[in-house]
Image (tube, rainbow, N blue to C red; front, side, top):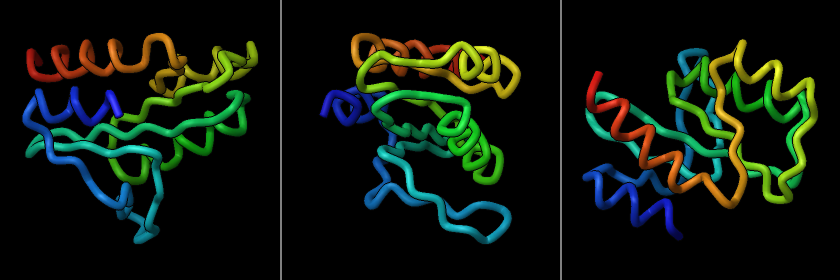
Length: 112
């Protein structure tokens, strides 16, 4: 998986299985999780992204503190989900750009 290669290149630990415990005590499952001492990056994969999938992932991110990326496998995203994404500080990506977006996110995070 390309995400694993990018995470390894950045020196991140890959979390297997991709589960994170939230502040609420709830265990949240993601499609992929990588982290270092200061940041956790999580990815959820959906066939299409509507406001329901986006909210589901955003809530997991709020509870765990992870930087959540939502990937649409078909490229289909509703307009409402796109509007919510900016409000929720979530990223909706597609299969053409999610690895490149992750690498850019790593650069932005380490330069903060």
